[in-house]
Each structure stands twice: as C-alpha cells, then as structure tokens.
Length: 222
Image 1 (cartoon, one colour):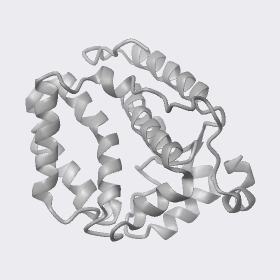
Image 2 (cartoon, one colour):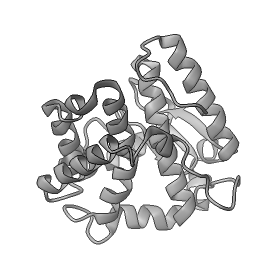
Image 3 (spheres, helix red, strand yellow):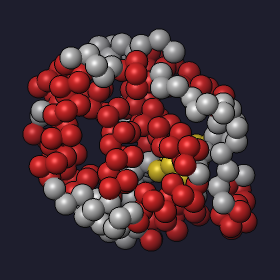
Image 4 (cartoon, helix red, strand yellow):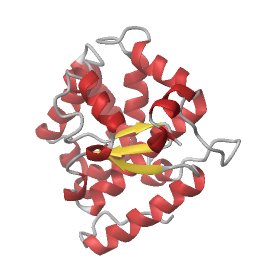
C-alpha cells in the first residue's frame, strides 16, 4: 500500500483506500470480520460490563481477536477516519496475535493494576494511538498535534473513565505526545513505518478467540 495523501479530502479517494486496507487485513487475518455493535449480543454484554464508559457502544470501536466491533455511529464517519481507525485496530490485532488472546487481555486489563497504573494498557493503546497523532501531523503539522482540544481528548482517553483511568499522570501522557511529535518532525517516525509495520514472523494464520467465547457467541467468534 502506497503512502496515503492526507491532503486529499475526496471521499471517493479515501473510500478506495479504506477498502484496500480491509482487503490487506483479510489477507493477514483470514477470519477477520467487522461486526456492528448494534447487532452484537457480545458487544451489548461488554457495554454493560464497562459501565464506567457510557459511550462504549455508541462511539468506540473495539477489537476482540480478529473481530472489530464498530461503533453505533461508524457509518457517519468520513472514509479517512474509518481508514485511520482500521490501522489503529490492526495494531491491536497484531498485539493479540503476538502475545496470545488470553495473555494479552489479562495483561492489558490487570497488570500491574486495573486502574491508574495499568502500564501495559497504556503502552499498547499508545502504540495504536500514534496513528491518530500521525494523521493530525500530516494534515495540520505541529499546530494540529498541539491543539488544546486534541490534547484534552488524549488525556480523557488515558487518564479518564473511557479506558478505566489507565494512567495516573497527565504530565506523562503529554510528554509521550511531545516525544511522538519530535519523532515526526525529525522524520524518525513516519506514516510508512506505522502503516507498513511488518507482519509477525509466522505469517498468515487464524487468530481465534478462546473456546468459551466461541461456545457462548458462535455466530460472532468463529
């Protein structure tokens, strides 16, 4: 996939990029599927469990193994936003495949603590959130990345209820953002490095959910 041109606002251009990305993900993860949260019993159950995030089903997309559960407002997003979100979610799919389904979610949610010091949740989410930072930089440069509204959005994700108060220090998140911005300005972090991250060394193989989830939600987890 060639480098996307983020200066192009043509919806048709981005729709084409989005469809090509879906094809690439399907080749990498043969049992990849997109499931609207509105139609998913599993996602509705997760929404009740994650009571601290009132927008879990309405505005958030969620990746569970090779399945991406899209938000209730997914179709309202411009194609460019859907493209960037899918790049973000593919990073989570690769993380899950690398560490194993159960290990990934146990460490993601609990180590060393579920809230305030969730080190691995911060680390792995930040790897994916770099996509959004990179998109903003390519479209609007330094000013767009340092937009107070965008900084507030990031702080809400990592230090607020949305991800169960992942991290205790807002200052640390801002430092992470400045490090990414510095890397983008020095060209040591580029869109190509994010979008063209190498597949895992064992190549194409199905990424399956645990047996219990496949038994409880067979239509969604196969």
